[in-house]
Image 1 (cartoon, rainbow, N blue to C red):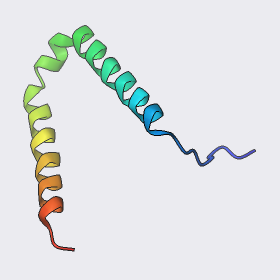
Image 2 (tube, rainbow, N blue to C red):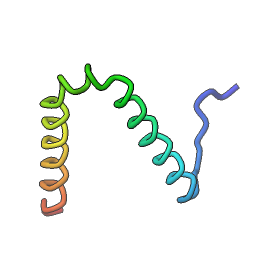
Image 3 (tube, rainbow, N blue to C red):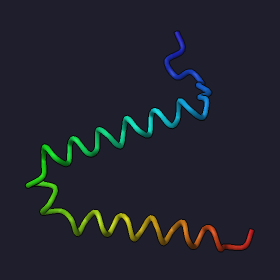
Image 4 (cartoon, helix red, strand yellow):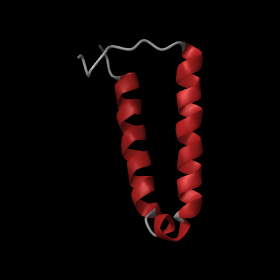
Length: 62
């Protein structure tokens, strides 16, 4: 029994997964609003760090 199979998804299946995860994130944020609102600074740090990483990576010479 192979527990870690290789999967290949079509572009529309990946889009469905993204829509599903975005919907889950919105629902969880609405449900846990009071807790999540206190951690807004942390989400901005994650956003800035990952954004900076990809900007540097995009303009970095190969």
